Image (cartoon, rainbow, N blue to C red; front, top):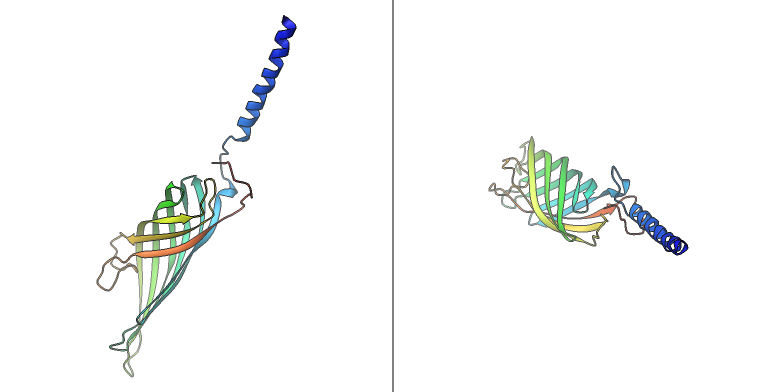
Length: 206
């Protein structure tokens, strides 16, 4: 009877060991993980009657959890406008650092908030012979909030393309996101996230 008990007990021990090994294998990692880093950014191109806008926004981020990304960014935008009635021209370069967060309630939708510190260098060129151009330098803080769509994003990964729309709610009168009447204009950005140090197999660290 004892021999029978030993024979039955040995397989149970192996089964328990296997469960412990499997549990250790899929135990979530803690601390900094380079696989959670991502880069990428967005590009802005806009044309209208007498106006041209070009911009890039590179970024570097980290996936804090499966549903929260955060990072730093840098904005560089150029705006050229011409008044067809007067012929006056305006050139504006805007640049500055920022930080952002994206909250994913589901894989393909996110809410986002982004802080920016923008320096604006403006040159006004009047269409009058002999009139000199005037230059101005302004700084502005912007706090953008909005939402977006993430395509191709999978659980445990941070490689995806996105399209977002945001508004500046800072109330700064020097904000580059205000129209000529002082109203907040929507900020539409399309970009791509590139996961760094990604394994080919689906990651299990989250």
